[in-house]
Image (cartoon, rainbow over all chains, first blue to last red; front, side):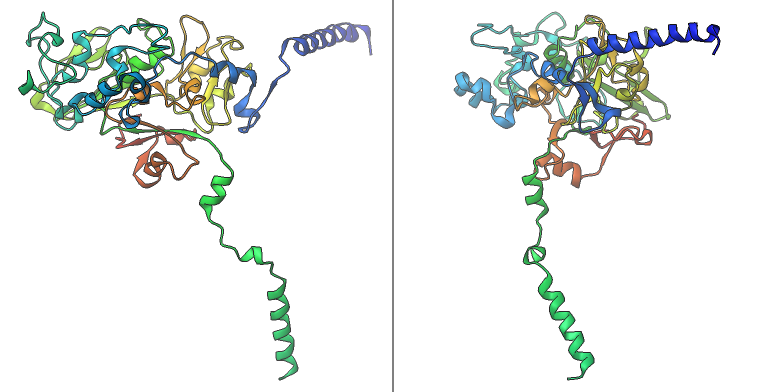
Amino acid sequence: MKSHVWRPLIVVICIVVGILVFRLFYVPDDFGSGKAGFMYSYHRFSAEDDARSQLIKYRDTGKQKMHEYCAECHGDEVEIRTEDLHGIIACENCHGPALNHPDEPEELTIDRGRGLCLRCHTDLPYATSERHRIPGIDPKEHNVDDECVECHDPHNPRLEDM
Amino acid sequence: MKRRDFVKSSIAVIAGASVPLAALDLIDPKEVLAANEDIHWAFLIDTHKCVGCGFCVKACKTENDIPFGAKVTRTWVERYVFTKDDRRYVDSPDGALYGFTESRVDLGRGEYKEIDPENVGKAFFVPKLCNHCATPPCTQVCPVGATYKTDTGPVLVDKTWCIGCGYYIMACPYGARYFNPITHVADKCTFCYHRLAKDLETACVNACPFGARKMCNIRDINDPVTKMILNQRVGVLKDEFGTRPQAFYIGLAQEVR
């Protein structure tokens, strides 16, 4: 072949070899495919461990497991509360994520805001939705400037006990 | 005895004797499955039970450090309102992070529509999240192998390897992926992979007071939630895309996409 073919060809070959050498050193050794095959699961295996190491914030597993984590210390409280109308709500929905409570943080930040109650108790005219079964108010008319917890007990929301 | 009958009987006896006893054992599928423990996480959403409180979105954003102010979310709740004069409205203000506290529907671009309560025909809420498809299109388009399907089902993103090209956002037919404004890489629901590793369910499942969200190992046929998927009438989103979604919906309306 003539030199005008060889010269650019050598440049291209050098670039390709350069890229392959760079790739050899740059790409981690633990790249591979999982069960789903190359198309769906070609990845760095240690990335799975990275994902597993993320911090867990919410500890309460809900009413079905009788609030295992919370019940360790607040057992009596949990037993009483789960009988209430609001017993289906996980403790941390209002009391905030436990993280490593009781060590860190020592006290949880409780959300006593009006917005939290309005998530379920805003009256929406949807007769076909489960929302209809929850007692609702019009947030623009019902004691606008007050927090709900000033009159209602979130742990015992029955109006006759108010 | 004729010679023909003798040969026939001999063949039958030899054939019968050559069958090993093990072949006559009845195989119980449950035992076989229990011996080969196989995990594949799936999600079940009962749209009848959802009231649109948005506790799931709040829990998800807190658990996974997604900024509340950013217009991105791993899971969200949609409200569908159908009026009696055959108009359909869908909205999800802030992904329902603060729930649905107004009867007016967000039409986008700062416009709102107040619907006459008398005119509301049917209305319902639908929680959405990544479907963790069995054949996920998002992992196929990734040019660097940063998003992948794990052996136990969840589709994850390798944050340190992702270059943030954004192909995955285009590839997902469900709009479940987004660009994380803090890490500047792809981000999506992980089925709370870090929680699954510690035998906990996802943050949204634990936060839901009404049991609208459930999780199960779909390979374990004794799991009560797997039984619900098997026995009840469930649907998946955008089946025609061939993505084989692993999030199943009870009470799925055809208008929900």
